[in-house]
Image (cartoon, rainbow over the protein chains, first blue to last red):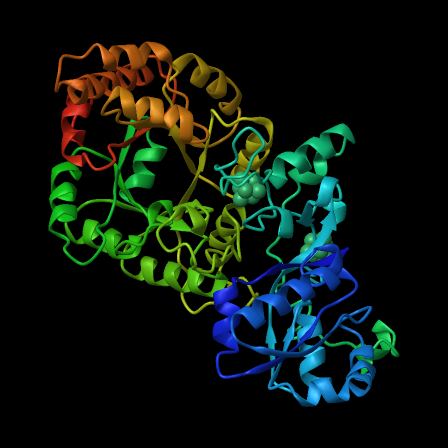
Length: 223
Length: 296
Ligand code: SF4
Ligand code: SF4
């Protein structure tokens, strides 16, 4: 699993740092490196583009994991180039951006859009298979998530837009319910699909999600 | 009991049609269409922001049908409202005499004209049917008692030409279990395929109205075959439309629709028909006339 990111258009990045003359760039050695959006190479290319656009790049860094506390340590190590920067441009997922914002004590701007938690498929393709709904229904659906993989999050079977196994939204997306049907049929468990699924709780996890894992579920419920 | 429900419960061949509200507030054309069809059909569906394109609301359209003495069938999708808004709209509909509801999932937002909108889909069509059942038992979805209980005649849709068909049929059966009293089908053009579907569907205690979408040209037929999931227009009909004299394709489409309705009625293939003359509602009375359907 990785956090899938995509670089914002350069104009949008420049617009977001329009008031700043000097920039420090932070990448990420994990997900953003694997997505080729915030590794050493991409950070270097970005530094070049910013210079071309008339910015002063005071320094760059690619911490092993952009979302970790380590960014704070890095901040101490790179105190001077950081101090000289008006803004920190973060080339990691939004976790990394928020970590940088809280630990580096500097204005930050994201260079990437965070798309989803993705599972890697063949040849650098990623797909979203879970959106952490807090009330997992996979036992009824052959281990394929209808909440995420069905564009509409339908729980009781396909809509009328399904077309030869593809979803009505197009763009090469498969119909989750054709997949679920195929899986359950192969397992001889179509009865799971025939069963009525009541409306889901969309507040199973109160948003924003927060949990204290030092207590068990039962203890937490008592409190 | 609604007039439409009475028709469903009788032995008569039930005829419904569909009107689409305008984009904006000029209701003249919609009123005109209602005026033309209201005395020829047992119910008039009012579409709900069809194809995810913003329109005057289906509930507003249904009230106008009612005011004009027609029998509205309120189309309700799960796309734009959560369970609170859906239940509230059902209360409102009932309080104003709109008591027939067609429950739909709704198209994806991205196929419509407000592509950045948030799709809701808090409920799905089966759950919406079940919700209507729940409120007509006197409680809301959260289990709270209602002050005044609404009752509806509820229906759903099925796509007999869906590929693959089996998952669609499982959902169809769930809709019936959730209380669907009538089913309006997606457009059908191949009566042999439809007969096969009906051989299966007859086992269920539900009234089935065959969807008849008026073909206005060979191009439209080809477009639907290529682009609209779950619609199959046989080559013979496409050729018939292509063979129409210049400017007469619509007339041929009218005759095809009338011929199909006549066959469905005379051969008792289904319990009725649902005529969709998208944008050409004014020809509906003529289609019905040619099909030998008596008014009312
Ligand atoms: S139902 Fe889907 S979104 Fe919810 S936890 Fe399970 S896999 Fe994730
Ligand atoms: S086509 Fe399939 S995946 Fe797409 S919205 Fe409909 S049921 Fe869901």
